Image (tube, rainbow, N blue to C red):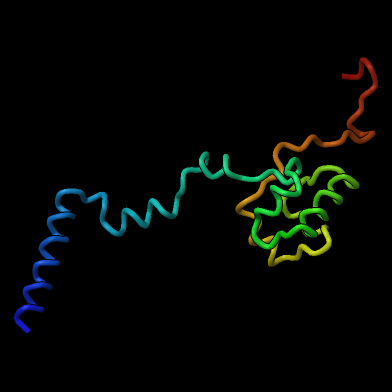
Length: 125
């Protein structure tokens, strides 16, 4: 019993000393850091679904060869995805799969197609 008590006291003392030496390593600090990851690091690891190959898409969770090929086929037939949520238009991708993919993919910068309203006559402004 005394041995267990001494071990517990030693552990508390050791943790207290570690906190005094480096308070940044306390549990609350680590939790705060985990909640706010570096935004640039996260963005650089996103897979662009508008340029990814079938093999690259298969690395995503819930995407096998058939779904990857369906994404590529849909993109070829309909043009680039305007937003990540447009992936639900692909057969086999539903809300649950989309929820898994959302933090892992991007559509990059998509050029908006000009409509007739966007086209101005020469000299009009």
